[in-house]
Length: 262
Image: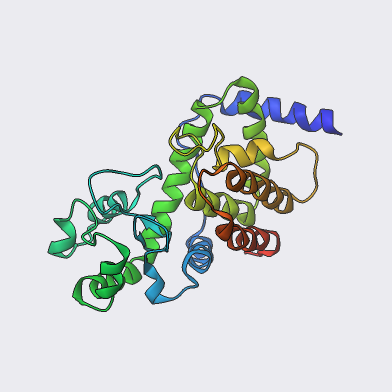
């Protein structure tokens, strides 16, 4: 059985090796449902959680996918996406408030200022803007996966490519599998940035796909368990204490096993 599965992976890899952006095909109803699940995972589907600044972090997390926006020109190790989201909004014809369109970095210099001004005009206006355009944020996340998979493949050797293509074929066969791919790449990234490494080991989608075994029945369960293994390793390798995040991450991953979409 294992040998047959691996041969299937080889055939898939030969078909997709030269692929361009990986097409993610969802109906509008499926895309909306996936967006609501991502919002539930990131912000409990609450309006106030569209603008947050977590303790012990140097940046606010904004929007449906809690996109990072650094408060100064010096960027941290994690991928900053909120400015890219704003550019995507503008391409789709969304008119941004003047203060937002002119801000090159987050206008709140620290968490204290952010929450001191939480109910003032700028953050209130930002939450309203983000709540009106949840659909565009879902499309933005879908595009990240479509563009991220080729980045993962370009960062992989020939053997890794075969495994990744096989796992992607299994996961993209159902809306539920697509959801875990979309949610995880938004949650922890592609796994190709050298900045997003602890002791040389990443924790993104690439690492999860390569951690998954080849022989299994329940793809959602295997993805969740493999992601748990990858994130547990991240916590062990971290130069600072990240243990307080792990329980919440595990709750999110466990939820992958029971989702049902139509």
